[in-house]
Amino acid sequence: MTAEEPPGVHKAVLPAVMLSLATVVSAVASLNTALPSLARDLRATQTELAWIIDAYALVFAALLLLGGAIGDRYGRRRVLAAGLLIFGAGSAAAAFADDPAWLVAMRGVLGIGAALVMPATLSTITSTFPARERARAVGAWAGVAGASAIFGLLVSGSLLEVWSWRSVFWMNVVLAAVALAATLAVVPESAEPDAPRLDLTGALISVAGLGAGVYSIIEAPMEGWTSPHTLGGLALSIVLLAAFVGWELRRPNPLLDPRLFRIPAFSAATLSITVQFFAFFGFVFIVLQYLQIVKGDGPLLAAASLLPLAVVLMPSARVIAPRLAARLGHRRVVTAGLLLVALAMAVFSFLDAGSSYWLLLTGLVPLGAGMGLAMTPATAAITDALPAAKQGVGSAVNDLARELGGALGIAVLGSVLQSAYRADLDLAGVPARVAEQAESSPAVAAQLGPRVAEQARDAFATGIGTAFLYSAIALAVTAVLVAAMLRGRPAPAAPGPGAPRTEENSMPV
Image (tube, rainbow, N blue to C red):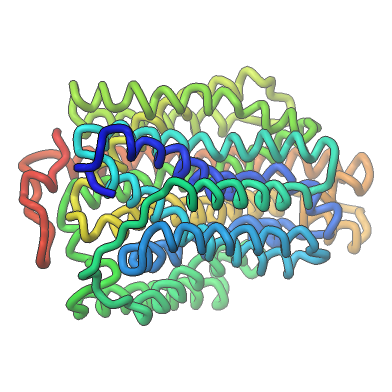
């Protein structure tokens, strides 16, 4: 389907791809509501909980570029349907898990399906909608991508009030089935007949590099941040990612051309999205445990506590951000959005066992507003910087920034939290076996008697403050960098054949 088709025909596509998008994005966050239940039921340690959440985000992020290229080459509708099938099947298998290792493995399978689905949704929009309607459709995509996480939390919280954590995976099965039916009914097939051959070698190198880095970060609280195990893994990650850049520079048709990052608008938007979602998914991972373990809220109340975030984010992304960007320029809007998110994280750093909900709400409002302001123009900048034949890869870069940021946020902030928790936990006089269990997981510690439970809650609150403070600093630094990168003249055109004109590569400043 093309922009020349009759008006209104392409509009039926938007709800279908939005449902597919919501299905895979909601799964990133939905299981966070069940973390205390998982810890108690499967006796999972805090490190294992981080792996259960991050296995999905890591595989999702690592395969997104390949998923976008597969969609470009073999057809976006076909790949979207295949991804939904894999996602649904993996969810059904995960529902029968009886140990953390199996759950981690099945979450990885879900990530494979999601990596096929997500880039196909945005590239279907950009290849289907005419230019005059594309910005609004991309804004809707960005809003749904952000708010779907809250949708997943609310639905999973409701299910957990009645059933076990396994119901979260059955919810995924139902959503995938409905999205698949909608895709087959209304989404047109689109592909690029001259799309280049798939770069499987580059994909494997990038997967190994990202995997080594995230593994080292998640395991650091147990192994030690300066241990040979941690430092060696991080060094290996750097070497592999450098090898990936070198490999891609030599390819005539790279999976991701590193020279694209010479375009200031493209690189600034990618950095902005990465750090936004570093903060956002790290926040969700931490705050839902805080509300249930420290504050004693039930799953539904914990999820509902975050609802103001979605209420603010949706209009900010769909209405306010496009209007402000048209009037003030993308540079000012993106920078302001990042600073608002940094402010929110600074507010969250004051949460402790005695905090009222009003403190959390005070941070949720600027978090939702800032995410909406920074997300929409950054997403549009990435897709607008590339020609039609690269829309799958362009949308995959956007999604990669989101999911890689999310995976790193869960890994880094989760590890900072765990390190601070273990360091602050005072278990003098407690039997060694009990102390070991308490150190492994605050959810488990809450069941080990009043004294241990109180110590665990206080130590967990200390870890929260440290993690959110680091997040606020990262966001503030990113805001300064993005503002600097978007200052000055338009960037040079993207390299390689078929690159768009120079003026199409620049974000209005």
